Image (cartoon, rainbow, N blue to C red):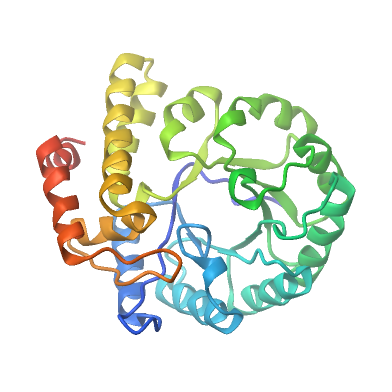
Length: 305
């Protein structure tokens, strides 16, 4: 099976919620429309940014359905189905395939962790078999999952044994430089860089596609990074990466992890509350975020980009 061949930015979506914690359908549709109009190359649903691990399985199915419905075939939808139970993950994958997801992705269980690549492969195989007609990307994010098996051995085994394994969402920012080694092991697979802060390095290393938390509202900044890297203008690329990293620093400083969702408020598209233990920012925190972004020149950067 062939990968999606992403050339550009895929954004990790947020899951909009009302104050009572229920899913905010209308905001999902607005988010998708904005991302389509912004020419993103895909939407990665229910990942870390989308608070997927904090939702019930029924909520995850519902959110996946709403994103696929809103996309209407205009933009590829990746559905992240990682779970602490491989069987639950397989059921979520089966559902994602049934509703027409363009790709499926999954982390490993992180409470009881696989101890080596073979054990990880057994679990991933269960997910792949449940969604055998849909491309599968393993979600490698050891800093959150705590799973640190040999990624090269896993890639080799998965590529040899799993027909619909097509690549990796590679979110270990510390080892993004290993792209060439991964490509030598499985050259037909697709590797999507997963570190916003290291996007410049990703482009320079040769990653064609990337998945990130801040690409939806920060796309003009990252477009400038890539364009300048490809043109050999590394000093200009560094300037734009610094601007992107300044945005990231501000959103975390002002609102914590919930800043990834509060940034949508900052561009005029509120996406609502977060799910405990992620704390929904207060109105004053969101205003502080907007003011800090304005002081640094963020809104001018968007227009300039």
